[in-house]
Length: 215
Image 1 (cartoon, helix red, strand yellow):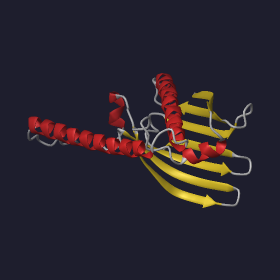
Image 2 (image 1 turned 90 degrees about the vertical axis):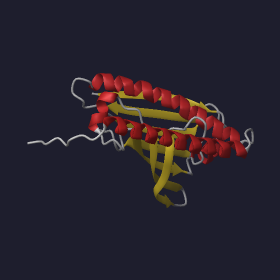
Image 3 (image 1 turned 180 degrees about the horizontal axis):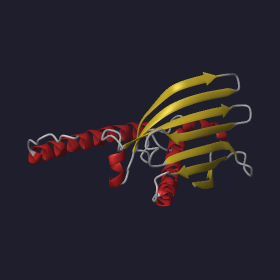
Image 4 (image 1 turned 90 degrees about the horizontal axis):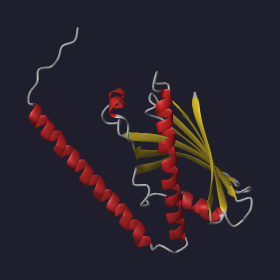
């Protein structure tokens, strides 16, 4: 069983501005969960720009599900993003999907950024998502949780887009973006340091243990 989700979002900016903002989305105050973005492939033709990017994001998985994944990836999500820009028809189509945690849940999303049908100076985003899970006995609950999380992420995505567009329009100074990046970096360092100290404390309390033998 697959949960299907569809929504339309409007941005009160021209398609050209949204197209430019798409590649400048990170960092922004609403996307602190996005850690890295790397271009894997890019192909440019007279009318098209085809790209593939790998995004690394923080991820929250249920405690009971942590045993399904290695410790170093349990709280990180790797998302593959394919995009096609049609400069002639002014459309930007993206298809994203998670490439880890798929044993728990698979989220596939397709977005089409195009001219707004009622206002050519605006941009409309048609967003579709397919959320599925094969965890026996829990698939429906996991899918419902996935839909709720997905809706919440859309809200942050739109706020982030509006923030970047405001910066492009000159309503927010460039230094705000640099300060945001600096704050995110400092917060990440503090989090890593706290996690390291906690790990050391737990290790000291546990003391030496005999290795278990399995037959």
